[in-house]
Amino acid sequence: MSKTLEAIIEDAIDTLKVDYEGYLDSDEPHDAIHEIADGAVPVYHADLLDLVANNYELATNVPELGPAFGGEPTPVNIIAANVFEAVEAALWEAHREIREEREEAEDAEEDKED
Image (cartoon, rainbow, N blue to C red; front, side, top):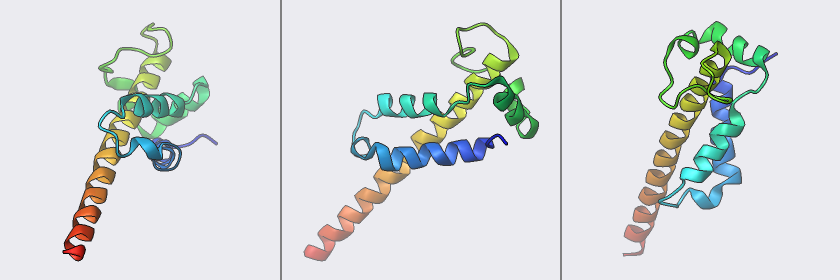
């Protein structure tokens, strides 16, 4: 059975937290986020089409980046691009939240020392 979009996003965020630890404090995590999002997109047509069963917007939204997999505007390429954009957006949000949590923890630690 194929993963849901939510499961794909959760796995991508876990990958960011575990495998890309060094990028979490970086001001330039673009490459890492792009790499994780790209790797999270299913490549099999059946898996991409299964995602649409619960997320019709994946097939109807026009992706900002254009169609994936070579750029032909086929339904599967549009779905893949929309999955990429959803995962990438979630990764950026997770990165922001993680950095804020770390900064708050550092501030609390500094306050404790004072």
